[in-house]
Figure 1 (cartoon, rainbow, N blue to C red):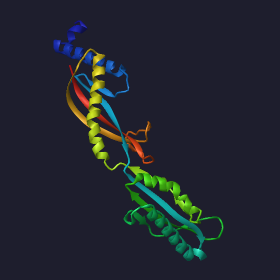
Figure 2: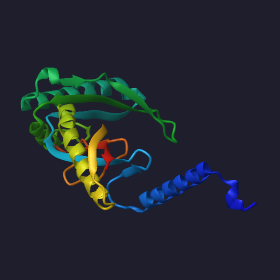
Figure 3: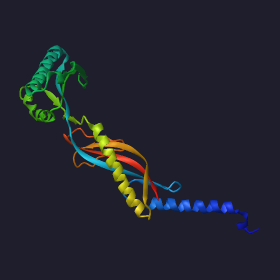
Figure 4: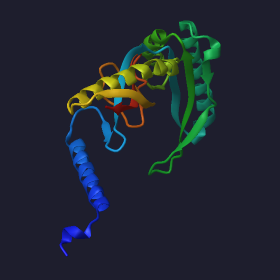
Length: 245
């Protein structure tokens, strides 16, 4: 018996379909571009990721200043009193600048043992003063002016202020539609290269949010949130699936 006679007409149809699918997948893998997409050969759909960006300005600032002094066990009690007095000076600095009292928080006094090779017991006595304000420009100015306290003998450790966008969820919603539109524009170009047309939208889902410094390209698969700048750039991605005709 000829080996071709071992296959029925149904078997030959199945083999032909498998060959067509293999060629389709090979073509899909060969197409490049900056848009992520996937062609489903059996359902004639095209999945594309689009993006949209918007500029925004932070409207909430958070800042923490730590007062600290290093001392020995014998001087621990007076050092704690000194740290408390220094913390009050930091509070007064903020109050005079216009930060409301209810927006200023003072932590308890912490005492941390400092270990060294000698037999002297040393301790780091510290207290944190933190503020939260909607006047982000004022906080930015205070972060530069607080060095005046150092000239008065107040020992402080200063971190950079953190700036946040309070209406980020609303911005994300406004950008999702634009990201889907961008995905469709990319899908049209991809389909055009294969001689096809993009049909109706089948499904769409929003992706992660990237809050970046202006002109930054630092993004993460899990989203990112840069708090170092007042002016920000927000990017949202969306994945959309279209029929291909």
